[in-house]
Length: 399
Image 1 (cartoon, one colour):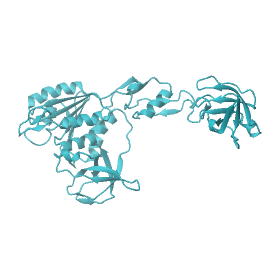
Image 2: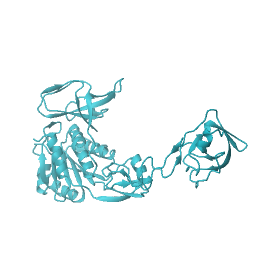
Image 3: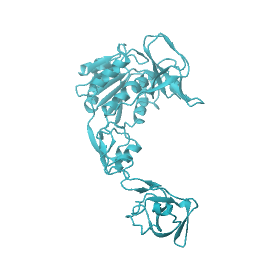
Image 4: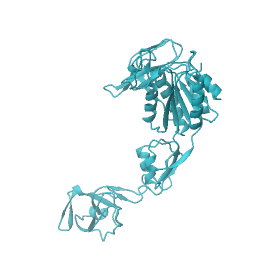
C-alpha cells in the first residue's frame, strides 16, 4: 500500500491538463482561468466622484467662499463641465467625472440648496481631493488583474468585464462518467427484494460534483459480469475524460473492475492506499488518456475518496492553482488504532471566541452512510496507534 501523500503525487503526475476554450463571461462562473487578465485602462479611469453633492474649488472654499452659485448639474456618464470660477459650484452625482477646475466634493448632507445657490454648513472646509476616487489609485493601465489558475467567481468575472473582455480563455469542463457496479444495486423507486440494496453511491458522487460546478456528467450501472464490464467500459473510456467507478475493486471473486480495466489496456498507477476508510482505491490511465478512479463500494469510502483525491485532481486538470488545504482543531479526542491514515467525519462549529472546531462524528463502519447526515466533511489523522487530543490541528476536507 502507498501513503496518502504518495497517492497525491502519483495522481498529480499522471492526470492530463484539459484543453482551453474561449467562452462569454456569463458562461465562466466556476471555470478556471487559463490566461492572464490585464487592465484595459487606469482604475478608476478618471477622477471619480464618490459622493452626491457639489464639486468645488477647495482653495476658494477654505479662503471663505460659503455661498456658491450652482452653475450646472453633471450626472454620471456626462462629459465633464468646467467650473467658471471659485464662487461657483457644480451639482454632481456619485460616479461622475470630476469637473475641470474642481478638486473636491462637498456631500449633499453638508449643504443646503435654495434659489440657485448652495450654502455650505458651518465649519465645512474640504481638503483637496475630498470625496474623490483618484484616477489610477486602484490599479494602473496594464496592471496584472487576474492571474491564470484562478477559479472564477463573481468578483473575478466583474474584474474581467471591467477590463473590457467579453470572452476569456478557461479550461474546458471535463466529461465525466460515473459507473456503479454490483448485481445487488436497485434504483430508487424500483421494487426491491430483501437481499438487495439501493443504488445510492452514484447519486452522492454526481451531487458532489455538480455542487462544485462540474456539469458534463453521465452515469451508468453495470452488473458484475466481466464481458459486460469490458464492453461498456471501453465505450465510456473512449468518450470521456474521467471515469469514476464505485465498487468492484476489493479482493472478492466478483470484484472484476481491475481485471476489466487491465484487459482494456488501462495502466494501473496504484491499487490500495494505507488509509481507513477507502483502502482498496484504484487509479490508472487509459490508452485514450482518460483518468480512471475506481473507488471502494462502501458509501463512506466512496465519498471520502471522491473528496480526498478525485475532486482535487479534477481542479488540477483544469489548471487551477492549488488552494491551501484547510486546517482545523479537533473538538474532542480521537483514537486511531490501525497504522493507517484515518479519515474521521466531523461537524464544524464556532465557539464563543470565534474559534472553529471539528467535532468527531464516528460512523458505524464504512457502510454507515446515514451517519454522514449533518456532517461538513472529514479530518485526516496520521496513522496510529495514537490518541489525538482535543485541539490537535489537522487537515480538513469538505464533502
